[in-house]
Amino acid sequence: MQPKMLVTEAADILGVTVQAIHKQLKTKKLPYSKLQNRVYFGYETAVQLFSDFKNSCKIFVFVLVKGGVGKSTLCREVAIRSTLMGKRVLILELDHQGNLTKSFGVNAKEYPVLIDLLEDDSIPISDSIVNVIPGLDIIPSRYDNSVLDNFIMLKSMPLQKVIKNRIEPIRKNYDLILIDCPPSLGQAVTSAVLCADEVILPTTPCDFSDSGIDTTVKEVRRMLNDFDASQVPMKIILNEYDNRERDSRETYADLIKHEKYGDMMFKFYIRECKEIEKYRRRKLSIFDSTSSTAGREDIDTLTRELLGMNEVATKGYASNRENHLSEVV
Image (tube, rainbow, N blue to C red):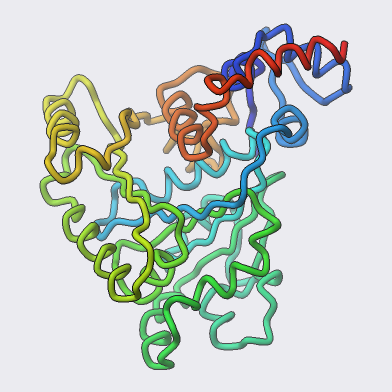
């Protein structure tokens, strides 16, 4: 896996010209490559180009009580795209099926997973962390995590601390932590929600009427109220949108106008893109290609939104950055 950020994309994010990015690459002697007239770079160069845009680490939790809506896929692609914006990212997979773990080619049997960390406090969390590509680590999952909820309940473990206490010692090492949850709302998911900065709820057009959004939203709010926790923002993202299908158009329109969910909606959607699944089966990312696809564009939009990168070119950064890049040449 070798994810790529195009120079044209970097220029758009930073609000500067392509020429300014080229000058920066050459002046600082940053590594880059070229394929069919498209210049691109990877994580190490992204760290340098996006160095001015550092924020405190945020934790995003991907959750919905219904399976098959793309939680793991979106989590995975957002994580990879974030590294191409210079972010150091950690994924914590809670789903015992371990599909996200497997998609990175990680053999979870070789590492402690969350249930192991809970059963044995002497195991440092660093033993669980696996680097999968430059800038991206994962705490993997396997079927042993299927007993997480029972273990947490039987041991009467404080849900506010189960995950938070294990993440806090390493949080300073990351710019972004993504937690991929199973399609349930048990003890482990509650613990994840209680340490989240934002909860992301994916749904699909064909599943919305029975998507579990209503149940998930109610349960997340109840969790927070039960533990006197601050209300965590929840955002709904419509996945697998197909403009040719009536269900997609109507579902998106209904959600945007929805009395309860309209304000929770991202003002964009993730279009259906077969390439994402094709690359995942090959243990690659859609960002391994330099081709322009709906999936690449939409994941980029979602990632920018989560990282606050959409604000870069609208807060006066662009002109300042352009001047800075010109001065160093």
